[in-house]
Amino acid sequence: MIKEMVDVGFEFADFSAMHYHAEDELTQEVGSPGVRGNTDRFTLKFRKP
Image (tube, helix red, strand yellow):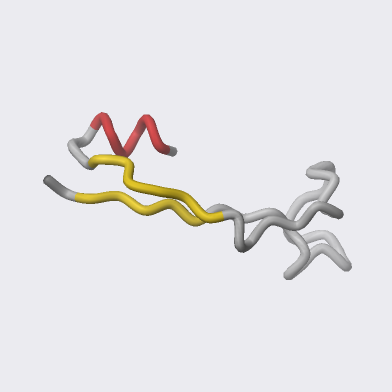
């Protein structure tokens, strides 16, 4: 994701781990029962120069 945004002209500014879920094993699809709201997500900040 970062590379794609930089390639189209944005500058990567920062990231946050506030949506990190250590218990997410990354083995199930988001739609699987019991997974909703318990998945790793990412928050990225970009600047347009």
